[in-house]
Image (cartoon, rainbow, N blue to C red; front, side, top):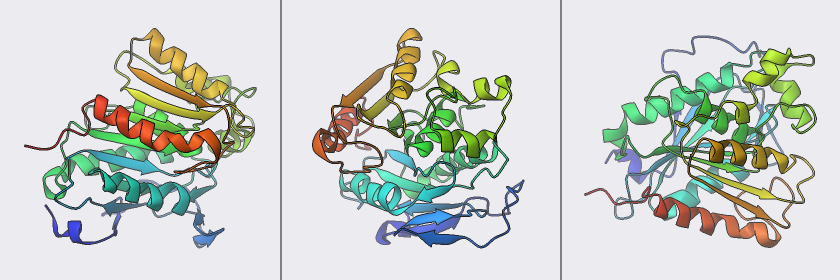
Length: 279
């Protein structure tokens, strides 16, 4: 175990030698609303390791939402990392670059995060075969993109957890802000199809846990239904929890029945063998 295990959080550059491309954002990064980070042009990976006595070897790249405009780092990042650490999962919060007209850049950051965790697995006490992604809202779209657009075993997550995720770019069911910020105001049908992740599912898509509140008026639950159906059609293991209330953006502990998702997720991770303790 690295000395990072004794630190609450350690922030690392995602691309130590500099990113291979730019999203073109020149204004200074700023923080609003108690943890919403805007104008992200320099991506980072925040490492949060569990205590050695709890560590299971499992790892999750946590991807906050924010409509591809900002990253909700507190509600959907740091709090989630603390929860994962509490039952032995190493958390790696991804502060990814906003697309700003460059739709491939968030995915490159997500893939780099997954590769980084695997490359430094021994240092961080991580099992390279138990590295997953967990994303919220637009971060759920990015997590599902990582789960359906991987280019090698190094970038393929072993499982995915999607909380009120944007899945489709179909204008009738997508989240308008996420769609516009990622694809631009007038995307081609080909671009819409490319980032409608329900169309990208194959038998190699990793097992998935999906959460929605059916009264979500921001991201329609149809997003989850479409992904669930695509996973079932390809014989991919999936758990889909649609709670009757909770709305959108509730993070780790939502109102009403949506507050039950963290415990359901922990049990699913255990059932999937993700929480098997290292020997």
